[in-house]
Length: 103
Image (cartoon, rainbow, N blue to C red):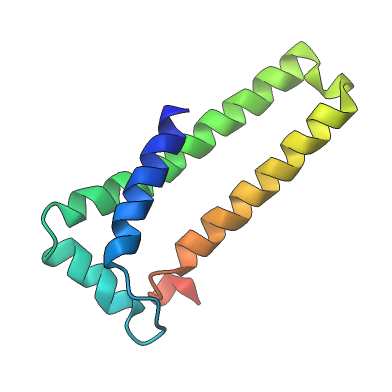
């Protein structure tokens, strides 16, 4: 829960300073890192928080496999759908800076 809250808060802060334009996306990320107070820190917390969040999710899935939670098919299928939605959201967040790795 804490990882998700941190991701949402840092994401909202970054969204306030982000320019959603293909030609200005990368420049706005540079602006956040260089000109916004502690922008570099918030961006790094957001980027590394994603990895920590997915580690927590994978541990949750492993626990579900260990305890046989997959036997409740409806609950397990909803969890799988949520996992795919989180992966899609992470992919979109990865592409947003429009850097070299976004293509």
